[in-house]
Length: 163
Image (cartoon, rainbow, N blue to C red; front, top):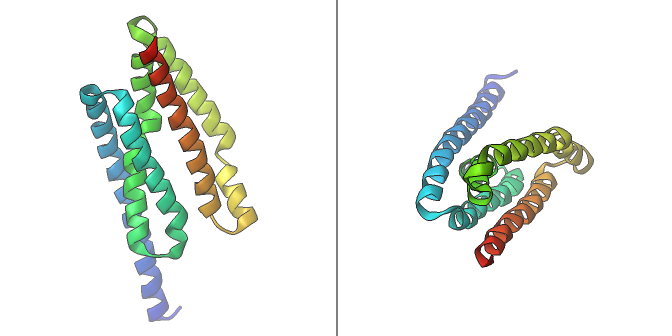
């Protein structure tokens, strides 16, 4: 390998490493901010806000094939900030929908469903990328699933508010 090729490769690996680290930081910040914001402003409002952030991150992930570093960095930050909706959100929804008597049971049921879904669908992005030659369609499928999930949770909030 020539020095020029090696330097180019090193630069790409450094960019990817920085992106992974940036995702981790965004995820930690997102968990803290989401939980605190739900306590202050409610799960319904924060569901819309963090749902939009998550969806924005997924859209940018689908565009990351453009190989523009700024898109990748924006994608990992938005996605990292939005993902807590699907993890911390389980506890928030349990408290909001289950009441004090059922919180622990509901958290357990939601976490089990989350784990089963993760286990069953974890290979889906790779299979889509193998067939299409890109992960962009997998991110679009994840975007569609996220939109449906967000709308279902928000609909539950509205239905509970009416009753």
